[in-house]
Amino acid sequence: MRTTRTTTAYAAAALAAAAALTLTACGSGSGDDDGAKPAVEISGGSSKPGVVLDTPKEKPDLVLTDTQGEEYDLVAETAGKPTLLFFGYTNCPDVCPTTMSDIAIAKQKLPRAEQDELQVVMVSTDPERDTPKRMGTWLDAQDKDFIGLTGDFAAVKDAARSVGVHLEKPVKEKDGSITVSHGAEVLAYSPKDDKAHVLYLAGVTADQYAKDMPKLVKGQNP
Image (cartoon, rainbow, N blue to C red; front, top):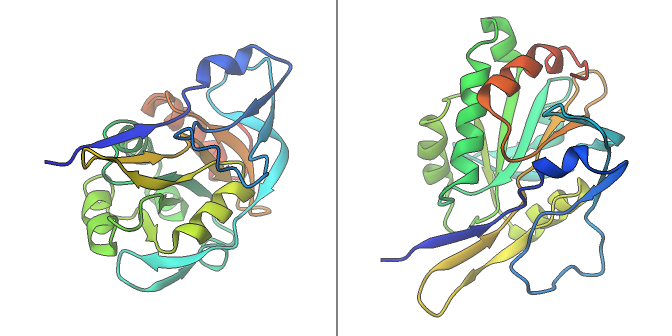
């Protein structure tokens, strides 16, 4: 039976360490960075789970396929709405299900109207296996309103890189397992300007997300 491995960045402990911190998600060691610098600069010295970005990030210009098999334009569909964006995959054994589950739990603590406003989008980093149907089934177990997108890996990689998340194409190993390298970042976009002002890393709990969400849906920094 095939197994799946994942490599991610667990950098939460470093947030309080430096005056200016540059984050990159771990890759599989192929060195395939195309000369780019997929870095996100954040202000250091904060112990808060959500870190305010020095330079807000534009939403990726990304058109993929949603879980209904329909074309989904990320920028157009989420315009003017508070949005949480995560790059991950359904076969992930740890970070992805934990992250999405924690966000789902936190979201349920919002008033119904604010739950309806909040857009939670997961973009597959393993689109060959993550069909729309599979993503739909997987995300429905977390929250039926979560949005799953899958499609061309090159487009996904470019979109991720534009917001400082480094991805590498899934690799089939000799033993039949598949290695998928992806970041652990969740980007929070404000409904006021459609830019990401806040970054979350792996290790943020449901309670921490819940504490921040009322502000995020209003376009405020936590």
